[in-house]
Length: 213
Image (cartoon, rainbow, N blue to C red; front, side, top):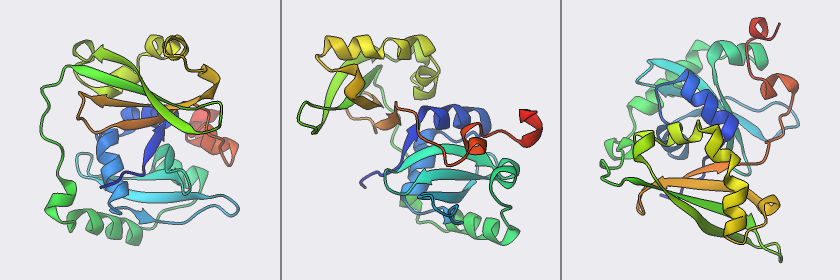
Protein backbone atom coordinates (compact mmCIF):
# COMPACT_ATOMS: atom_id res chain seq x y z
CA UNK A 1 0.00 0.00 0.00
CA UNK A 2 1.25 3.48 -0.89
CA UNK A 3 2.01 5.37 2.30
CA UNK A 4 0.86 8.94 2.85
CA UNK A 5 1.73 9.62 6.49
CA UNK A 6 5.09 11.06 7.45
CA UNK A 7 6.32 12.97 10.47
CA UNK A 8 7.89 16.17 11.64
CA UNK A 9 10.82 15.70 14.02
CA UNK A 10 8.67 17.29 16.71
CA UNK A 11 6.06 14.56 16.20
CA UNK A 12 8.71 11.86 16.52
CA UNK A 13 9.85 13.29 19.83
CA UNK A 14 6.29 13.41 21.15
CA UNK A 15 5.55 9.85 20.00
CA UNK A 16 8.56 8.55 21.90
CA UNK A 17 7.48 10.42 25.03
CA UNK A 18 3.78 9.63 24.97
CA UNK A 19 2.97 6.23 23.51
CA UNK A 20 4.32 2.70 23.25
CA UNK A 21 3.40 2.63 19.57
CA UNK A 22 6.19 3.09 17.05
CA UNK A 23 5.99 5.70 14.32
CA UNK A 24 5.63 2.85 11.80
CA UNK A 25 2.59 1.49 13.65
CA UNK A 26 0.96 4.92 13.84
CA UNK A 27 1.56 5.45 10.12
CA UNK A 28 -0.11 2.11 9.36
CA UNK A 29 -3.12 3.00 11.51
CA UNK A 30 -3.59 6.35 9.78
CA UNK A 31 -2.87 5.18 6.24
CA UNK A 32 -5.36 2.32 6.61
CA UNK A 33 -8.07 4.74 7.81
CA UNK A 34 -8.24 3.11 11.25
CA UNK A 35 -8.55 6.52 12.91
CA UNK A 36 -11.57 8.78 13.33
CA UNK A 37 -11.37 12.25 11.82
CA UNK A 38 -12.81 14.49 14.53
CA UNK A 39 -12.56 17.68 12.47
CA UNK A 40 -10.37 20.69 11.79
CA UNK A 41 -9.87 24.12 13.25
CA UNK A 42 -11.57 26.67 10.99
CA UNK A 43 -9.23 28.02 8.32
CA UNK A 44 -6.60 25.28 8.69
CA UNK A 45 -6.06 22.16 6.59
CA UNK A 46 -5.17 19.96 9.54
CA UNK A 47 -7.18 16.91 10.46
CA UNK A 48 -7.47 15.88 14.10
CA UNK A 49 -7.33 12.08 13.86
CA UNK A 50 -8.39 10.07 16.90
CA UNK A 51 -6.86 6.60 17.16
CA UNK A 52 -6.67 3.77 19.68
CA UNK A 53 -3.35 2.39 20.92
CA UNK A 54 -3.65 -1.22 22.04
CA UNK A 55 -0.22 -1.32 23.80
CA UNK A 56 -1.22 1.73 25.88
CA UNK A 57 -4.93 0.86 26.06
CA UNK A 58 -5.47 4.56 25.49
CA UNK A 59 -6.43 7.12 22.85
CA UNK A 60 -4.42 9.80 21.06
CA UNK A 61 -5.03 12.51 18.47
CA UNK A 62 -2.63 12.93 15.55
CA UNK A 63 -2.65 16.38 13.98
CA UNK A 64 -2.05 15.76 10.27
CA UNK A 65 -1.72 18.18 7.37
CA UNK A 66 -4.41 17.07 4.94
CA UNK A 67 -2.34 18.01 1.86
CA UNK A 68 1.16 16.82 2.69
CA UNK A 69 0.41 13.99 5.12
CA UNK A 70 2.80 15.44 7.70
CA UNK A 71 2.01 14.61 11.32
CA UNK A 72 2.67 17.82 13.23
CA UNK A 73 2.24 16.29 16.68
CA UNK A 74 0.50 13.49 18.60
CA UNK A 75 -1.55 14.51 21.63
CA UNK A 76 -3.06 12.64 24.57
CA UNK A 77 -6.74 13.47 25.05
CA UNK A 78 -6.17 15.85 27.97
CA UNK A 79 -3.63 17.83 25.93
CA UNK A 80 -6.05 17.95 23.02
CA UNK A 81 -8.82 19.23 25.29
CA UNK A 82 -6.55 22.09 26.42
CA UNK A 83 -5.41 22.99 22.92
CA UNK A 84 -8.45 22.31 20.77
CA UNK A 85 -11.64 20.60 22.01
CA UNK A 86 -12.84 17.74 24.16
CA UNK A 87 -13.11 14.34 22.49
CA UNK A 88 -16.43 12.71 23.46
CA UNK A 89 -16.63 9.14 24.71
CA UNK A 90 -18.72 8.21 21.68
CA UNK A 91 -15.83 9.10 19.37
CA UNK A 92 -13.43 7.00 21.44
CA UNK A 93 -15.75 4.01 21.15
CA UNK A 94 -15.89 4.45 17.36
CA UNK A 95 -12.10 4.80 17.07
CA UNK A 96 -11.50 1.66 19.13
CA UNK A 97 -14.04 -0.26 17.06
CA UNK A 98 -12.29 0.81 13.85
CA UNK A 99 -9.04 -0.64 15.15
CA UNK A 100 -10.42 -3.83 16.68
CA UNK A 101 -12.59 -4.77 13.69
CA UNK A 102 -9.90 -4.11 11.05
CA UNK A 103 -8.99 -7.11 8.86
CA UNK A 104 -6.06 -8.99 10.38
CA UNK A 105 -3.86 -8.40 7.35
CA UNK A 106 -4.31 -4.64 7.76
CA UNK A 107 -2.44 -4.64 11.05
CA UNK A 108 0.31 -7.10 10.19
CA UNK A 109 3.81 -5.77 10.68
CA UNK A 110 6.83 -6.52 8.59
CA UNK A 111 8.71 -9.69 9.51
CA UNK A 112 11.73 -9.18 11.73
CA UNK A 113 14.72 -7.96 9.76
CA UNK A 114 18.28 -9.23 10.01
CA UNK A 115 19.57 -5.96 8.58
CA UNK A 116 22.23 -4.08 10.53
CA UNK A 117 22.33 -0.86 8.53
CA UNK A 118 20.17 2.23 8.42
CA UNK A 119 19.81 3.65 4.90
CA UNK A 120 19.37 7.44 5.14
CA UNK A 121 18.18 9.25 2.02
CA UNK A 122 17.80 12.98 1.45
CA UNK A 123 14.83 14.51 -0.39
CA UNK A 124 15.60 17.78 -2.12
CA UNK A 125 14.75 20.10 -4.99
CA UNK A 126 17.23 20.37 -7.85
CA UNK A 127 18.05 23.56 -9.72
CA UNK A 128 14.96 23.13 -11.87
CA UNK A 129 12.65 22.72 -8.90
CA UNK A 130 12.17 18.97 -9.38
CA UNK A 131 11.95 16.73 -6.34
CA UNK A 132 14.79 14.22 -6.12
CA UNK A 133 16.08 11.64 -3.67
CA UNK A 134 19.67 10.53 -3.03
CA UNK A 135 21.16 8.16 -0.45
CA UNK A 136 23.17 10.21 2.05
CA UNK A 137 24.66 7.44 4.12
CA UNK A 138 24.44 3.79 5.13
CA UNK A 139 24.99 3.73 8.87
CA UNK A 140 25.42 0.81 11.28
CA UNK A 141 22.15 0.35 13.18
CA UNK A 142 23.70 -1.75 15.94
CA UNK A 143 24.68 1.20 18.20
CA UNK A 144 21.00 2.23 18.04
CA UNK A 145 19.71 -1.31 18.69
CA UNK A 146 18.15 -1.27 15.20
CA UNK A 147 15.62 1.28 16.48
CA UNK A 148 14.90 4.25 14.20
CA UNK A 149 13.57 6.26 17.15
CA UNK A 150 16.94 6.00 18.88
CA UNK A 151 18.65 7.35 15.77
CA UNK A 152 16.16 10.20 15.61
CA UNK A 153 17.02 11.09 19.20
CA UNK A 154 20.69 11.49 18.31
CA UNK A 155 21.08 15.26 17.99
CA UNK A 156 24.75 14.89 17.07
CA UNK A 157 23.82 12.85 14.00
CA UNK A 158 21.26 15.38 12.80
CA UNK A 159 23.84 18.13 13.21
CA UNK A 160 25.87 16.38 10.48
CA UNK A 161 23.08 16.20 7.89
CA UNK A 162 24.13 19.36 6.09
CA UNK A 163 27.68 18.05 5.75
CA UNK A 164 26.43 14.67 4.48
CA UNK A 165 24.26 16.47 1.93
CA UNK A 166 27.16 18.60 0.75
CA UNK A 167 29.33 15.49 0.31
CA UNK A 168 26.65 14.14 -2.05
CA UNK A 169 26.47 17.39 -4.02
CA UNK A 170 23.17 18.49 -2.47
CA UNK A 171 22.52 22.08 -1.46
CA UNK A 172 21.49 21.63 2.18
CA UNK A 173 19.04 24.54 1.89
CA UNK A 174 17.13 22.63 -0.77
CA UNK A 175 16.82 19.45 1.34
CA UNK A 176 13.34 19.44 2.86
CA UNK A 177 13.26 15.94 4.34
CA UNK A 178 14.95 12.62 4.86
CA UNK A 179 13.79 9.02 4.94
CA UNK A 180 15.27 6.26 7.06
CA UNK A 181 14.83 2.55 6.59
CA UNK A 182 16.36 -0.49 8.23
CA UNK A 183 18.15 -2.37 5.47
CA UNK A 184 17.63 -1.97 1.75
CA UNK A 185 14.12 -3.39 1.85
CA UNK A 186 12.79 -1.93 5.10
CA UNK A 187 9.73 0.30 5.18
CA UNK A 188 10.95 3.91 4.93
CA UNK A 189 9.99 6.46 7.55
CA UNK A 190 9.88 10.01 6.20
CA UNK A 191 10.83 12.98 8.38
CA UNK A 192 10.23 16.62 7.55
CA UNK A 193 13.36 18.64 8.29
CA UNK A 194 11.88 22.08 7.87
CA UNK A 195 9.86 23.60 10.69
CA UNK A 196 6.17 22.88 10.18
CA UNK A 197 4.19 26.09 10.73
CA UNK A 198 1.64 25.69 13.51
CA UNK A 199 -1.91 27.11 13.29
CA UNK A 200 -1.52 28.54 16.78
CA UNK A 201 1.09 28.94 19.49
CA UNK A 202 -0.49 26.29 21.67
CA UNK A 203 -0.01 23.52 19.12
CA UNK A 204 3.53 24.67 18.45
CA UNK A 205 4.42 24.11 22.07
CA UNK A 206 1.87 21.36 22.58
CA UNK A 207 1.95 20.99 26.33
CA UNK A 208 -0.91 21.20 28.84
CA UNK A 209 -1.62 24.68 30.09
CA UNK A 210 -0.28 23.92 33.57
CA UNK A 211 3.03 22.83 32.12
CA UNK A 212 3.42 26.06 30.15
CA UNK A 213 3.16 28.34 33.16
